[in-house]
Amino acid sequence: MESATPPQCGVQADRLASLAGAPIRLHLLPGLPGRVGQARAAGFARGTLPLVSFVDPDDRYEADAFAHLADALEACPSAVLAYTDETLMDEGGRPIGVRRLAYSAFQHAHSASHVHGLIVMRRSAVEPVLTRIADLDAGADRLLTRLVARQGSVLHLPLVGRHWRQHPNQHHRRTRSTALGSLPSLAIP
Image (tube, rainbow, N blue to C red):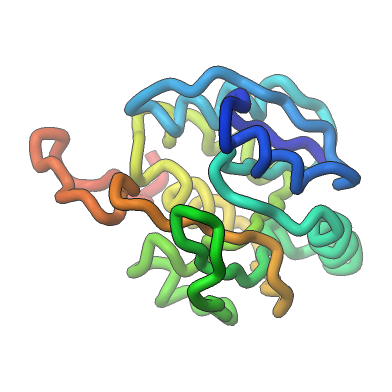
């Protein structure tokens, strides 16, 4: 499995250390401010393995959760995406809660953070939709997982795979600019 992330620095190096021992081939890439979709697409393009993921350098991950997700996808060929639960942590890394979110297509369509833990997807389902996310920032991950989910089933593993660091500058805490217009449609072009 391959995973892409922006390069490490400062506190992020400590967070990426949580990936030690994970059964992944990590591609560290420079971030592209305001272009999350383009950065994700560039990361996925670097790899060739059949499963892909992405990680954020300010979060922590459970290294063994990658293998659990890969095993679940192997056991269910019709599944195109598998994800875990996550804990929330404050800026200092102290736990503040757990989010356990069994899959709901309705919730996925209406909540950007419904499919948000550690996520592993089949490359074969990701590659055809990468052009749809390339111009997006805040909505790139949500649109990517929704487009992938439309191609098969989604698996939720009820284990914590991600520790999501909360901070005041996160996209979901900022007012969305209307200068960019509405979020893209899921309609097939």
